[in-house]
Image (cartoon, rainbow, N blue to C red; front, side):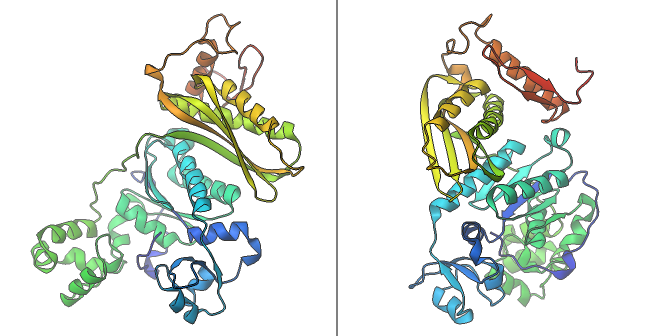
Length: 420
């Protein structure tokens, strides 16, 4: 959640050169409030505050409420004095965690280099993903569209050469926008900002700098570093001077090893035909298995998630006798779990597959599965899927699709003539 001040001069087109700009900062817009609006569309357009009504604080507010001066972390009593007509919604942290987890999984499908910094924001380094997925702006736009389609919420994306500028760019892209700051425009962009926009400049530091006549990033950059050391301390002064010139060497640090890997998809229209739901499950199982192989892990548990048209979410899981990273095996378990779910006659809005209880493949003892007893050799199915992984890495994720047969996966190649 971004609270840094914005500058009107920064909200403009800084150019289209994406070379050297591979860091993305993804920030959900008014996250808690947006999740509530997705579940309660009748509240859209109204000033909505998420928090406890009695002696509580504001956890999130829609932009309609923010127009009255309501901000996160202010007391609810003060917020209601500013906006007495606001609709107060109690928080549902379980729902927020679920949406957050789903969005973070979307990011992990783009690149393994994801640094989650809070429930609603993360950094990505897409330098290694651009050959497969295209330029950073395309990645950002497709991600924003997917978040909107699958969860009914919006996010803003900043793209730049480092974490500092990417975060500032996402702040200025809000709400529901994308901003690219080319590497060559970094200093010019920073010089449009108030000093309070910089990382490490809180209210107290901002006041100290103001007493030294420093109120903008341009003035911060142009101030001798020894003066800054005298003003805010030796370490902080040098650090802020570097940031003012766009020098931020911190890499995106991937989080700890995933304890589960999942994928889910929301249908454009609610679906009653379970055969269609099953076909979507096959695609999701393929996606999950590819990520398992990419992380060199296998899953001992497969879980199914189904959300019906009334927004009720059902989950089922099964533990396997033999851990797997094979798409067909993941799919068959998910399909069986789907058949056992009582949907109460309601159509399906969303379906998801999750691989849990992950283990390193190198240290896991495996044996032929029920699908492999008639194969020429036990690893034949997995070998075929690994070959598909290699084609996708070279020609893109849409270049080849997995089908299935009783004896193993079949493949359909799309526009990949000349593969050798």
